[in-house]
Structure formats: structure tokens, C-alpha cells
Length: 211
Image (tube, rainbow, N blue to C red; front, top):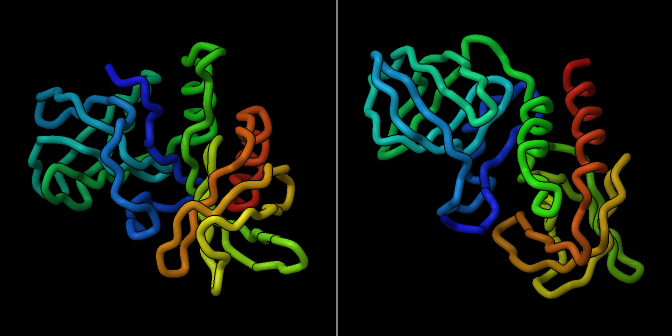
């Protein structure tokens, strides 16, 4: 069993988790394990992205579009939904009723041992600023985890640039730009971002999207 952290992405806000697949490079896992139920058959699957409204699932099942399925999460939740799209080894499931993503995050963290507890990747949209020396870059935060962030913006700093990151309501450690792709940049943080600081911030972000 791999000791690598899961790269399952939790999507904040009332958005489906496949509307912007290009924002994250293809991941090879590991992903959070789950099970999918279809026509009385239970099969193991992977949760690649999940939001309040649906999930992107890695599965060998090949249901038809519109088929009813249920996804059994590691937390014990079993949201029902319908297949919105399917391609090789992957399904998009739209839930019949929305789920509480923050509660799902909390349960995932509680299930981890304290010494191995790390924040998973969270996809969120909010304004950010990068600073290097006397220069500032406006950007859009796209996703965040305990070890890094992804931002989008024009003329972002080059690979190897050390930057300070500013996001309202969240104290983010400085980091280094470690990859660039078009208008996207990945920043590796010099210090791990604590889950105890991210969870309240995520909860507030969810509240803002609901207002």
C-alpha cells in the first residue's frame, strides 16, 4: 500500500467537479477509495474530484448516461445520483441531493492519525496576490493543499521565483514557483499549511458562495 498522500480534489461551492478539468494536470493517484453501486452491483472505485453537487469517479463500470448509481464514500455516506457523462475508466455522477463538503473534509481528517493528518487538495476560486521584491501580481487562487497552491493570472513569475502569497482571511507561508503552464502556476510552500487554519477559511468560503 502506497504511503503517498491522496490527490483527490474537494471542490468548494455549488459547482460540478468536471466543469474545469483543464485546471489540474492529469493525476495518477493515489485517490480516495470508494464504492459505486449500479443495478445491484457493487464495485470498488476512486473519487478523483468531489463537490456538493457531484463526483468524478474512476471506475471500470460502464453504465449508460442517465443511469442511477450510488457512491459509497469512506465516511459511510452514500449519495445517490445519475451518470452525467462517461469516458474510458471515468464517470461523472450528478448527485440527487447536495452533500456537505466541509463535513466530508472534517470526517476525512478525523479518520487520519494525528501524526499523518494532512489537508487534501481543495479547489476554490478567490482573489490572491503574489509578491516578489517590490513587484505584485494579481492572480486567481484555483486550488490549495497543505503543501502548495495553484494560481492563474497574466505574466506570472517564472519558475524558481520565491514569492509571498496573500489571500484574504488566510495566512499562507511563502513559497517557490515550481511549474508554469500557460496562465497557470504551481507554488510549493516553504512551510506546511495547517488544516486547522484551512478548514475555518473553507467554511467561510462556502458560506460566501451560498449568500
